[in-house]
Length: 328
Image (cartoon, rainbow, N blue to C red; front, top):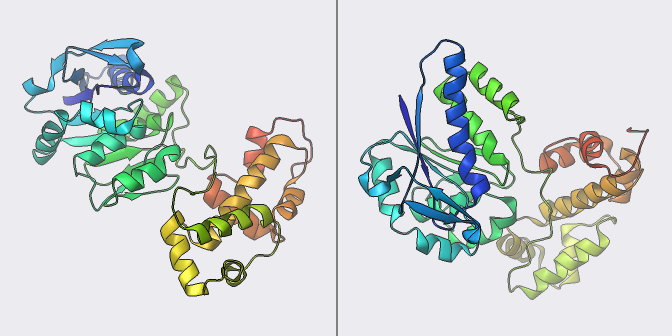
């Protein structure tokens, strides 16, 4: 029997708390239907018997307090709402317990921005992690010892797991369910909850607005120049010249300020422009490719898929708001 402890954090988000509880409970039902014994013992645990979520809109009753739990197989840390500093402070008493359980062999998984609380334990130091794409910059600032993986849906660091944003949490839960049972059970659960089991990137949902929360004025000027002139053939040397910095210094400062190289930044700006064009126009892939500064179909497709997680045609088919017939 696998013991699953769904920690209900103070300042929890109800939409992230219920899925792990429901999934592993449902897995027991699937196993029973096939004549197998239940595999999971699932419970809500917390610092208090009743935990308010979503600014008090809901309340969850925990079945046990963490101070009474000396052993468990998996701790799931759901997402939190509001200010992360305040949320972490409200859950400080849980950090020693999570660390102690982990040293005893317990696996720990964070869902969405639950990664902020997981990182506060120090268990992610020197490791990779995923969280909601909208919080990447803040996470990097708060936890510089952790490597945030841009766009990833699931990160497995061996007994420590993290998921991307929002519904990406389901993909991590299905990943763990498959690990603990088998592929067939995970597929059945995916169908039951209508989840794409093999999605592995947040790229299609990411809205790239540029990392501008820094104090480097010259790099900010370069960013603004890229965003206004991305259709043109820009070179790193030309960008460096526009702000009167040597290319080597420019590249170093750009990476330090934005966490992207200048080339990566240009690619992300162009792909974001392409996404918006696919969503709101009838243009085909070639037309959009030329509009955003590419003239090589193979290169455009490769870069788009690497950043968005799906091909240009797949993105257009999924997210176009207008009728279209020519998809090439």
